[in-house]
Image (cartoon, rainbow, N blue to C red; front, side):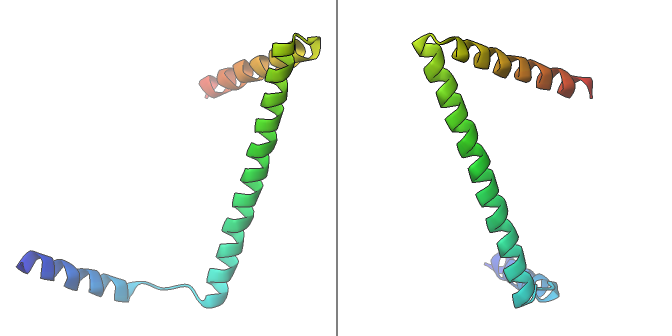
Length: 86
């Protein structure tokens, strides 16, 4: 039981050393997180919509789908190549 009590005492001592953000800092940081989350949700939603449309065009046999599919594949290959160069 003694190790648990010592752990809790040490934890309490460490928490006293923490510099906590002010209410205004916490609010600003919260807004940053919410903005970044909303931005990433929008980007991922648009990407999902675009890929769904490309897949639909490929299934329907449209030439637009083939061109879009080739562009996506080419972009993926280019991204892989650029990452491997570093």
